[in-house]
Image 1 (cartoon, one colour):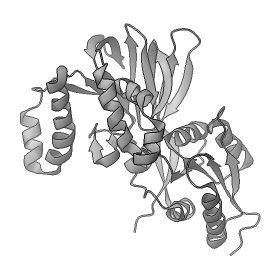
Image 2: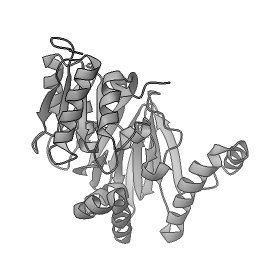
Image 3: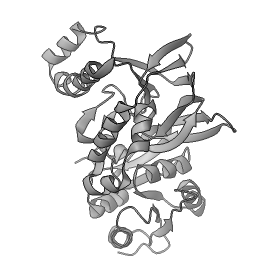
Image 4: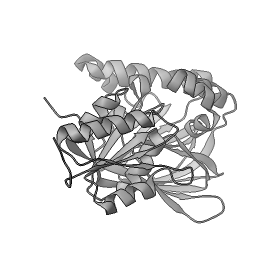
Length: 326
């Protein structure tokens, strides 16, 4: 089948993540098989991991834009596609592949990724927006798809050994967590949800999520939905090692196992409010101001120290290709 002169895909790819030659081959073969014109390929750079490339693809008339790379590449391409109406397709090639996991997109097969891009369904999702104020300098705006954090999660990203990630994948984060917890000191923040009074708290980390599933099926924010027009916030306030064990128990046992049965859900309801290690909140916006600047991460990308961040949600700002329902 020939698609000459017809619709085409533009693939924005990270040259150091995944197999670029295999991506080019599968998407070129897929275009011919499914009647699309030959795809175009744009390489990301260290200076621009994908935002400008995605905007260029939209201006060029691409029917879909494919992000081939890790979570950082996906985040930047999504930022470039914000409110464009042009669907994003994924070739998950990183350590976390967080958006793909939350949308049940298969991992590990470029052939499957190309098939979904050309023949899948299009789903509309929200996009998280972070307005970041550094200690010195102007405020900048960035998108995120899955989760942003200030505290131990940002320190964990900063402490993750890149060589270990190449060897053992997302398990490298466990090593980083151990090293981050060892030097962790709780910090004081002031936070304010939309149309609510300002609150203060001493926290180990605060997370703002568009969706809540992490690798290994960890349901960190089990009620987060990627298309509900809301952000889900988790305020973690563990007290010592026992407190962190309680956090782990809640995330793995309560958020995971108990929620799968009606009896388990009744147990959760009966014990609500008795565990102060994690507080869950929901709002279309939240502003966070730490007393002292703290490290910030968005979808696993380091953004350095921030003295204030305002998080908002752009409802339905992104269209994503997902597997077609049978």
